[in-house]
Image (tube, rainbow, N blue to C red; front, side, top):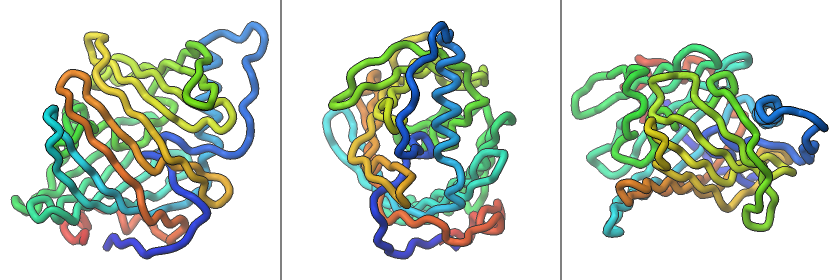
Amino acid sequence: MIHVRSQRLSSSFWALSLVLGASLAFSPPAPGQDAEARGLEIAQEARARGEGFGDFMARQTMVLRNREGQESRRELRLQVLEVPGDGNKSLFVFDEPRDVAGTALLIFSHREDDDEQWLYLPALERVRRISSSNQSGSFLGSEFAYEDMGTPEVEKFTYRYLRDDACGEFTCTVTERVPTNTRSGYSRQEVWQDADELRVWRVDYYDRKGDHLKTLTMSDYQQYLDRYWQAGEMTMVNHVTGKSTVLTWMDLQFRNDLDENDFTRTGLRRAR
C-alpha cells in the first residue's frame, strides 16, 4: 500500500531524479578537456551527489492546460526506492479526479537495459505493460512522456558540453545529451544546470526530426537532509500543441523503510 505521512523537513525534493545535488561547487573545465568528456563528467558528478537517499514518498498536483488556457487538475502520490547499481523503482498512484482514481504506473528503471513500465487501469481491471517502443507516448494525457517518468540514467545517453550561459541569477553549464535508445521520442536534449549545485533549471527536448518539441523548467528549489535539492514546481511546455503540464511537489519524506515488496506488478491493483 502506498501512503504519505506529513513531516517537516528542511526543504524540498528533486524532480523525477533529474536534479539531485550537494552543496559543493563543481570544478571548472580542465585545460584541453574535450566537450564529450566534460559533458559526461558533469552527468556522473550529478549522479554521485544524489546517491544514498534510500527511498522517499511525496504527493503531487498535476495541472494540465490546453492552448486556450482551460485546465484540468489531478492529485497523485509517488514513492521511489533506490536500487544500488541500477535504476530506481517508482510507483505513481492517482487519487483524483474520480475518473482516474486508482490508476497506477510502476517503473523499474535500469542503467543499461530498457526501463520496464506497467500501467494499471481500474476501469479495465487489468495491468498493461508499456513496451519500450511506446514509452514516447503521453503519460495519461499530460505533456510528460512515459520515458520522462523514469530515471535518466547516465549510461542511456551520450554527452557533449556546449557552453556556460546565464540562467536567471546563476551561471549554468549547458550540456547536450543524446539518447542511445533509437526508439526514444527525442533526438537530443539540452540540460541547463547551475555550476555550484548542479541543479537542473531547464531541459529543452528535440523531436526525432531535430525540431524543438518541449521545454521543462524547474523553480522553487529547496534542500532536504542538508544534501538533496528539489524543485517545488516543474512545468513542461509543448511548443507544437501549445499545451502545458505543471507538477507541484508536496509532503516529501525520505527513508520510510520501503523495500522491493512495495513495488510489484501484482501490488498495482491494490495501490490505494
